[in-house]
Length: 461
Image (tube, rainbow, N blue to C red):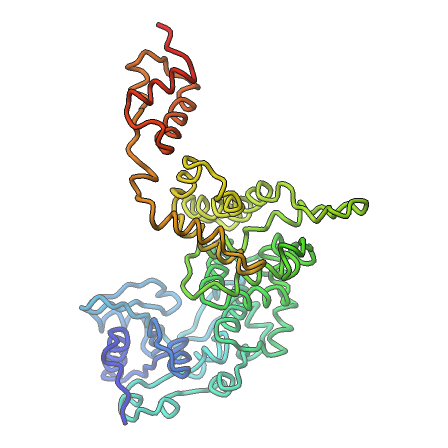
């Protein structure tokens, strides 16, 4: 029975490219991650094509192309439906002086030669989509020079050829090894693991942006705990995020954290992150207690009522998070949200006692749904008490937006019209008036002005 992927426009576009290349006498196959995913029964996001055709032939054959990496044999082919497919010429790479890209490449007519320069066996398989459509037998349609099918079946991640050489060529492959092993639930083969441990310090030759992107993928692909435990055991975490390794062994008060130390608590949060979680929420979960190691204070042995404390851990955590996010070149927008998650994660402890004005200001924090989500992750990863979460969630979902952030009764223009001179006190005046409005103590401009006059005095003319 034939397998049909005709409903997938990416599959159809890539298969049509294969057909067109073969029609002019060239070899062409699906390559890389899409083959792996099809063998696993997953629907690939993208379908890449590998071919014996040189880049200039690909460009001439298809009406709309982008030469994003023609020097390395990579051309993007765009079809009329808006689908873009990466088409790469078989090649053999030269030396990788910069630990990222080959200094030179030699195009090859040999598919096997192309496969042998790739990273991992599970990513080194080729697939004939025409045979797949004709027979429906994915094993029969797969071309495997490196034992990728066997490794996939045995749940093993193995570098192709000499693992030390593969990682020397592109240091980022070490992080990719961890990410694939975590996401696909694979064990890293011993020689491959040893090569990562031996070269872990070299990961710092990779740009911070590329490291950031790999870590973000690890956090958002649904197996974040496994990924970060693997980062830790390979020695990579100490290189890319040493602040996180310091959470190991930092004990917490058992009455609030029966689960164990700060590292264990954080790993439990990561374990609960769902696939496709917001990157800012995921980083907030990772960094929310990052200030605890530096603020740990043991209980007073002479005071039986004393306990472990982390005085100021939020403020310290904010500073550490800002350092980490700056080093990894996060955008200003993402940095602001992640830092806000760290800064505000302990405020839920006060929600039942907050004045209405304070509560409403809390609820209107940008992306408050992420603050709620982080608090749920935090609670369910320690004591399990969701009383405060349920209250805050109920308030957030039921209090009308116009009550949380109403149109202001009093503005700076109103103060000036009343005779007040602009100055540092304006902010306090406006906040006092808004607090009264949020609490229902002022419902008109006149009431807001009277409150300001009573609290700050009448204007001097």
